[in-house]
Image 1 (spheres, helix red, strand yellow):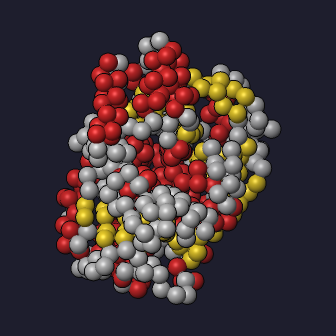
Image 2 (cartoon, rainbow, N blue to C red):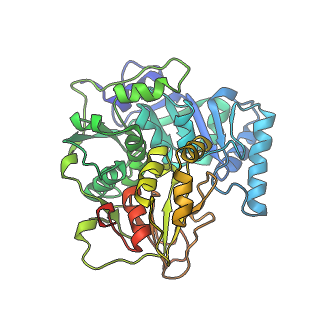
Image 3 (cartoon, rainbow, N blue to C red):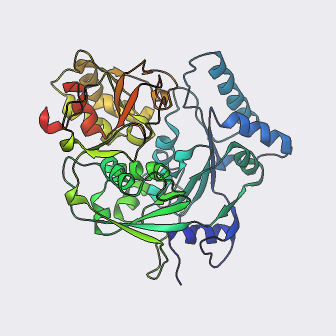
Length: 419
């Protein structure tokens, strides 16, 4: 029996010819990641081990969740990370003004690449599967040990093949694809499995689409979400990655426990209703208008340049509804700068949006955009759990930038065709 992409990457990093689902393996790591919330406890565990870092070039520390510091505690957390990075000469440390949202800047800066094995003390580390790597989230204790040893253990996951077919409509983006998938299989449909994307429809997806889809693999319970290496991947990676890399592809007889087929041509814009990402509904099927108080456009899911472009094209010449707050957060300094050059930032401000420095901010209810009792938000973030963005009675509706921007203008959940 051949191997799928997940198995090939884990086998290589375990120093074995082959591995199979359910097998326990210890693997050497290519990259270890933590942020301002998860790094401090990881650093405390690392210090207990009493060893130097395994490789200063293979650790990324990105203080992006509560930074710029929202309060004294946030400042203290950032200082722990800053002091550790300085002491151990960490190459990939990003301070304010140079920092972006971690899962935006690591691919953007070519820090992650095809065939790599990456762990991060953040559940959305699975984003890097978009560039044909195996990447997954771990706890802070495991990460602390990894910073000292450069190794981690894994149970080789079973794999689900997601077969993509058809042509992607112009008003559909990666967010619609992944929300449709989660709506179909549920938030536990891929529990401790990898999602491996395949089919002719893959070529329809931009790199932004793929990064969004892989980012939200965890919302289906998946350990990883991996795309094949193709010309789109190659063009993206070769423009950024300076080190050698080895792509992987599944064997023709690779093993999958399930195949899910999605015809892209049949997709329409969707939103996920509170309070789970699996509560997916087509916007056209919403019978009664759902009025909103806030829109968030950004995050590690939809804070990339293409997302900014989609939102700006819809908002241009329009105003955010009087009763709606719209916050736009470019995912990195480079995206912010390019958005300014292209006039997107002017468009957002002219429309009445608040534009933020790159940060996770409202996604996790960290700061900015916190909602009070009974308020509703359409958000391009990745989770809509109860109370995640504020009061427990507030509601988050997940959507892509097409729906988010249109909703901001009309003050209710809407599609661009209605603007």
